[in-house]
Length: 209
Image (tube, rainbow, N blue to C red; front, top):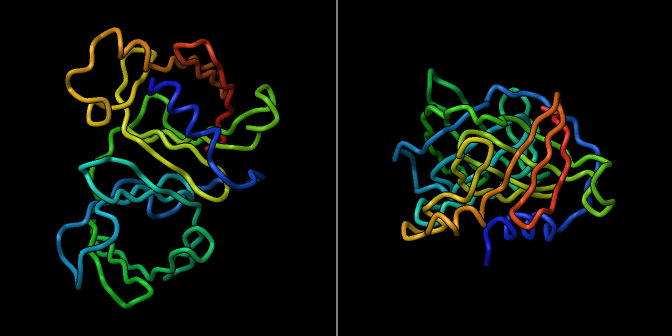
């Protein structure tokens, strides 16, 4: 299956009803990596916060991220509505998470290079009605796609004005022709961006964060 088509297919297949969502920054912004300490091994070895979306990486063996919108108070995070309820505490560059089972995990702030199209982008009315209100999220070397219910993310690699799934997904034996087929081109004009795959399919998105 061509990955460029796959990215669009995954996006179009996501369940849920899209709608308005207020995107705003949080004190968690960035990448946090489990430092191996705590009462147990966490579900997520890595946490990515961008705006008020959190994505978690289960394993490096197959780098796929699950994500949700979250809200927070001075001491607690609610992720995906009530999907996860965590207490948190900052101490320097360490984020301590205590989950709903009182298990405690420690994450260290890690460098996440800025994506050339960094931010959260919303499908605009220029695209068909079925996709209006959905989101693309780009941060570091990650693309995620989703709605108010959930996100799914993958690692990508940039080449000029195009990007393609990372070799960890494609395999190191991928050819240049296959990379071209699996690449997605992006064109930015102000706060609008057009994403086009190798089949010529386009999606127009507007930056909201």
